[in-house]
Image 1 (spheres, rainbow, N blue to C red):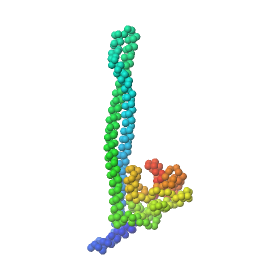
Image 2: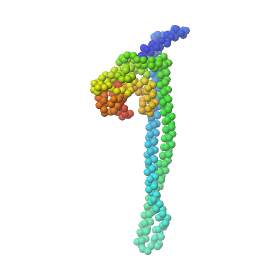
Image 3: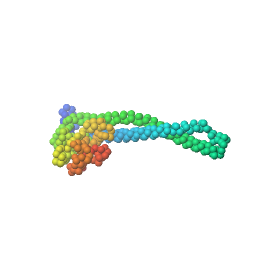
Image 4: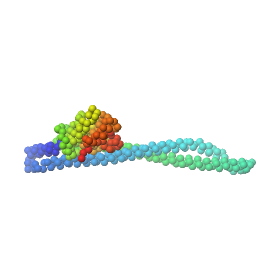
Length: 350
């Protein structure tokens, strides 16, 4: 809806008041009506920005905690693996430790006894060497076994702590996720209600008018996802729309694309109003979809494509990558890797 249409709506309310409310005539100031409409629109946009900022901040906090939980779970898996390896080593040591214990039990003073009962110096020296060797082996085995036992206890304690903390974090994150979805829905519902309170249904708010490329600039005065229909223009496929200037350049690009491939550019998503962005956000894990009020789809300056473009390296993708900038369109750098979205293209404005 343009500023003029918005101002007209406010005027109608004031005219109604002139006839039905005693004394209202004296308060009517035609010169102030347009300023009131502009302030009202600015107020709506400011509230939309505030809701968007709050939700975006909460989403970032959630994804940060979610990443920390993933790291803790990885640490738990590694700790359990180390614990398993330690227990296997201890198991392998049980047999030699048992044999050593039996030997020392049967011959606790084998060195001294052999010196008393031996018949030759050679035999005495051999017995003494055997005892010393057994003693060294005993100390080494016991030291290694005690070290492994300490490791086992440490890994066990760490694993138990990690299991407890990750289980608690999972429960808290689930609560946070529910709160995020509720916050998103609440802020979206409030903004849509404000439109209706101003005498507009969502359908009337997006009533179709003739596309005019110059009217795309009017979208700058409206919140993300709440663009008026006269700032939008229909595309060549289905009910897809874009901001007027972006739409006209996209249609020009489609003509060149059609000449190259003999078919129109395939579309899966274009302008997405606030309610639809809220739906997408609530259906995706936090971080996978833009927070309502931040998506370029809500500005009417982004499309998701199909028909081969969704796969990087195809002839269709390569052609768009090489030619799209001539029409003001481009594939954003982030979409090459994080998150990887070869199908997502955006319109570059001043």
